[in-house]
Image 1 (spheres, rainbow, N blue to C red):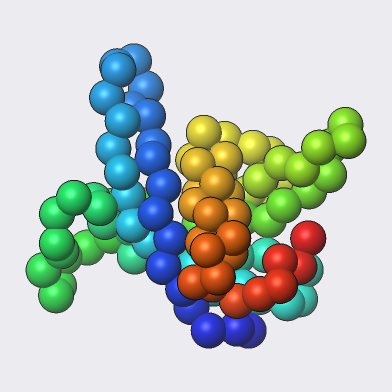
Image 2 (image 1 turned 180 degrees about the horizontal axis):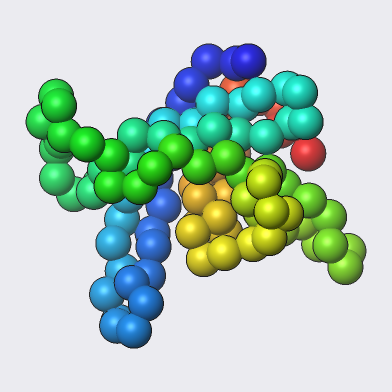
Length: 105
């Protein structure tokens, strides 16, 4: 397991035109590999010390599908708006060298 790193991603709220920017912490696990992403908070509001996470911890991984890479939930191998948004945040963090590198995918 590598050191945790911060990610930021935008998430559209279903049924509306609202998009909320979130911050979270991602940690790479080398067994599959997959990422555990936790401690989700609104990026525009500084969380208090004991504020609960907006989402439960998510385990996501990148898979190849139809000659492209897609971010999916580890348990179901299915993509969702959340897994795709988190994946973009991980890619951005790795590209900016704020996360563990190199990208294992």
